[in-house]
Length: 312
Image (cartoon, rainbow, N blue to C red; front, side, top):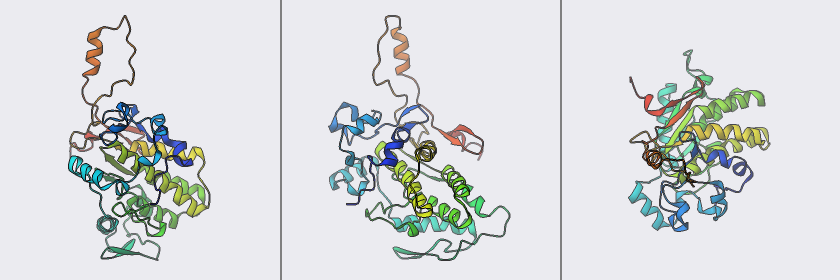
């Protein structure tokens, strides 16, 4: 078993508080699954995921679906319709999207049944003025019900658990980073466009453990490419900058409602006051569901997700 999700690693430990944030509620993401309820009341579906809480359990309990026991996989499929797409299908679908954007086939690789061969030449861009490499990196992409985010990044095949070599990765963000590698000349320019690439990819997921895994997969993708291109580890400032983008762009949501899965979260502990009316407490506990916010990095402000589809 390859240990892809190392919660005790330097990059994850440096950013775990950020990776657990829910920007819409200004609290933490929740478990949103009862798969961990056997651990106690703090691990039920409506409980927030807390850093200290994760420290108190075996870190390896948070692992990709393929490494969960078969009984748990079947249960989650039945209850939450949780299935994960093989990497070759993700590649094929991403290839179709790129074929439409570029205007020609086999831009990043040649698909051969359930395998693919990366192209060797530098990516050729259309002649249109709005179809240069910068426009491709900035083009916004969303993976709905993203699970572990296999369409965005492809560190491993979610259906087999096999690692994917960095030159063969097929995720949307992987493709953007390949373009950046081919068109930037120094580390400063590279880092500027890497940040823009991370700002351009989005995904939402219902279950908290999948969401955390997806966020870690994006974070470790940054670590992998920095090592590969510049032969160094990221510093804490760089990690936290990327993690903050990820915590905005990969968010927890009930996709049918556009809201946080269980609405307003109650405080973990509420100290009663003699001067606090009971009616006010009850009113707070019955607040309406929270609409999810995401961040428009070009305008520099948060926006409600449900507002994005209006007028289309």
